[in-house]
Image 1 (cartoon, rainbow, N blue to C red):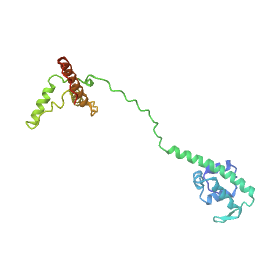
Image 2: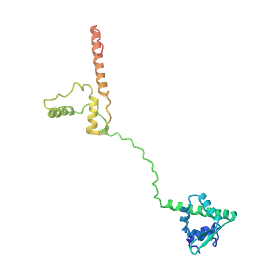
Image 3: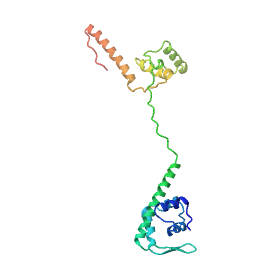
Image 4: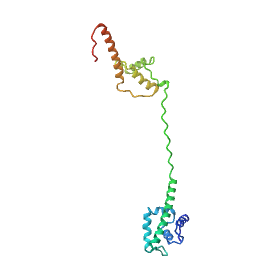
Length: 214
C-alpha cells in the first residue's frame, strides 16, 4: 500500500486517480509522497507527459518487486490528464504557501509636499547695515589683520546691498542663497552710470562735452 500523505492522496483521488492505481505505489517508490514534492518534481506539464509515456513499456520497481504498465494509449492519456490536474492543484497551493511566508512590503506612502518656508522677521534682509555693525566689522578686521592689510572699501563701493545680504544670511537667518557672479559688478555699474549722468548734467550746464564711458 502506498505511503502517501493524506491530503496528497485526497487530491489524487479528487482528480480521477483511484486508490488502487499502481501509479500511487510508483509515486511512493519515487519519493513523491506530498503535494509539495509533486509540485517541485515536475517543471512543466511537458515533463509529466514524458514521464507518463515511459509507462507504455512495463516497468518494474521496488522490493518486493512491483510493476507498472499502461500499454494502451487511451489509458495513458487518461492518467496524464489526471496527473496534470493534480500537479496544477499542488503547484498552486505550493506557490500560495511560499508567497504567504514572504515579508509584506510596506505600502508606499505619499511624500508630503515640501512646505514653503515661512517668511519670518529674521528672513527679511536689510538693505543697509544695521546701526554700528559696519563700524564693528571694520574694527574687528583691523584688529585681526593688524597693519598688514587694508580693508577693500573702494572695491566694495556701492555693493553694500550684496554684502549686507551675505552678512545677514551668515549671522541671522542661516537661509543661504547663491551670490551671482555679476551681483557686485551690477551694483557698482549702476552707481558709475549714475555718477556719469550727474557729471553730464553739470557739463551741459557749462556747455562742456560729455566724456565717453570707460
